[in-house]
Amino acid sequence: MKLETIDYKAADSAEKFVKSLRDTGFGVLSNHPIDKQLVEDIYSEWQAFFNTEEKRAFLFKPETQDGFFPAEISETAKGHTVKDIKEYYHVYPWGRIPEQLKANILKYYDSANSLAAELLDWVEQHSPQEVKDKFSMALPKMIEDSHKTLLRVLHYPPMSGNEEVGAIRAAAHEDINLLTVLPAANEPGLQVQLKDGSWIDVPSDFGNIIINIGDMLQEASGGYFPSTSHRVINPEGSDMTKARVSLPLFLHPKPEVKLSENYTADSYLMERLRELGVI
Ligand SMILES: O=C(O)CCC(=O)C(=O)O
Ligand SMILES: [Fe+2]
Image (cartoon, rainbow, N blue to C red):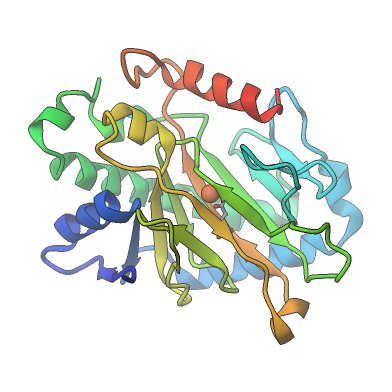
């Protein structure tokens, strides 16, 4: 099995996209409205930023979670004991952003957020009535004017050869949020787990946009939409000397949005962050 790339502009794109999400938790779109040159510029200017010590002046604040997360403290995925080999920067429009990087990253944040609202509408339109009935409000409305939606700029450094045994760039995990929108990274490595437990590559052709379901949409849809495990594997051979930059936008509803009988978006997020030990 492989993930099919869907042409965003095709007449049946919405239907095909939602079927792919339902079957695999992932959907891959080509021919979409995100500006590829903008993404390329962001990859190179943030790569340069991660290569300087300036990043340390933007060390994240535990209370607000914006800023730079160095490799020494960056995530250990739920259920794992070895840290991922990555560092990253959390961008929120209200948060601290290095001045020279502001214009492009905020432009990207807005355009990815608009596309995401449209894709959430596709999901809603192609959900069976009994699933639609579970949503406490229209899905695009859940993220409208949300201050919680997070753009993470990830930097996976070249492999040094001294990595901890068993460490990979991003260990298998599920995303916490509603939906994640991710332009194909500048290097391959992203994989998704199928229902039979096997791992397949997510097509990483530059210019594709990759969308995946997070746990909040799984919760809100009563499990109809699966939040599937994914990971980023280490490069081999000559690719070991290459860094990888990627740019997931994690869509988070407004805190007060009711997700299910058991959770609001806020109570769900707090439970997960406590489990991860980051609050
Ligand atoms: O770097 C990638 O391609 C994916 C990153 C990811 O899955 C995450 O940060 O949740
Ligand atoms: Fe993820």
